[in-house]
Structures are given as structure tokens and as C-alpha cells.
Image (cartoon, rainbow, N blue to C red; front, side):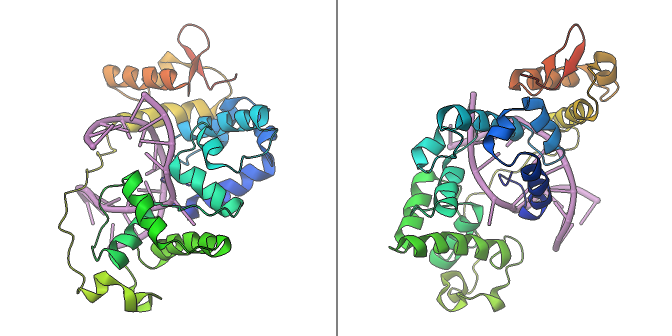
Length: 255
DNA sequence: CAACCGTGGCT
DNA sequence: TAGCCAAGGTT
């Protein structure tokens, strides 16, 4: 849920979710479409599908227990380098570097003296964090969490609260006088308005809103341009977020 | 590596 | 206001 989604938006949905599905086996026992429906407007609905798939995998391959090993975690659908390490470190206390967007920004500023991090690079990011990580297991877990929290709360992307920063006296960016970012321009996120993402979102909202099949006619009413509309629907079908329920009928995945 | 994938709050 | 950005992952 936390992938590319603010913590404050996740917490209420997570609490509802865990009340309904307290263990992977509970989630694995319901159709994937139920996960997509409960995901609601958290965004990126394929993550709901992946989370359900991971629950099935955990139930079938790991006896219903979330694996502790990073490599085993990486083998789960939708679990990448960050999430695998976060689970191993925060849930199980293992010593691994954990690098998220906050960590990258804090290291860029405090260590490299730059306003913004370079684009994410698995090798460089893990090397940089490994060099800072305390030797002790508990200390490493706290350091991973602490540097992330520092980035989320103090060393924020837009208006960092440097005056109240606990490491301001060793921050190289501060020492250098807060030089502006001079690296390559980061890729600009495409406009949402009028995008395929928007159309996909509209179709998914319609699929979530009813337990009856959604018709082609209803989908046509969601977006005026046929080519883009059909591209969005085709994509959702290819992703498994929608399935055909007969000619011109669509539902959330039920198997 | 670049493109793609939702949604909503903040400036 | 129109971007920017958010505990990323997959193709």
C-alpha cells in the first residue's frame, strides 16, 4: 500500500484491511476482485491484485507465514527491492540496507551535499546506505527507520525543516550553503487529466461500484473518445484487473 | 534504462 | 494554478 502512496493515506485503509483479512490466508481465500474493491481509491489497483497474488503465494509456498529472507520475499508478486528489505528489516529485525525515496534524499543532502538525489540506482543506493548502516542488528533496524522518518518529516522534498533537524550540524548540504540542484532534469510526470491513467481509473471505479457486470454501453458513457477508451479497457483486461463476463460485459477478477 | 501505472494533498 | 510529489514494481 505504501508504494508511491503517502503514509497518511494508507493508514485508515490498512486498518480496515487487516480487520477484514488479518492473515495472508484470509486474503488468499477471497477472489482477487474483492481485494481490488477494498483497495478503493488508493491508486495503482494492480498493487491490490499483486498483494492478493502474494497472499496466495505465501499461503501455498510458505505455510501462510510471510518469509523472512530477502530472496524469498523478492520471489513474491509485487515485492521488489525496497519492500523485501523493509519487511526483512522492520518486521523481522534483520540487518539489511533499506532505501526508499526518503532515504535517497537524506543521503543526497546530508552526505553528498546535493539538494536532490540522482535518479534511483539499486547498486549505488544500496552501497551508499551500506556504508552508513551500523554494525549491530538492532541499531541497523533503527537507523533504517530513522533515516526514512527524517526524510519524511524533516528533510522533506519541498520545504525541509533544516532549523529543527537533528543532524543539521553534520549536514554537508547545509555546510555548503544549500546549493541548488544542478544535475539532470528528472523525468516529468505526465499530466493526469486526459491520460490513459484517468480513463483506466474511471473504468475501475465503475467496476468497483457494482457487483453486476458492467456493460460496454456504461463504459462508453465514461469517456467520449473511443480509441482511448478501448485502449484503456484492453489494458485493464491484459492486466487482469477486469475480466470478460460475456459479450460486452466486464467484472472484477473472480478467480 | 525509460515508460507506464492512480489518486489526492500541497504549494 | 499547474505542477510536484508520495515507505515502488514490472515490463
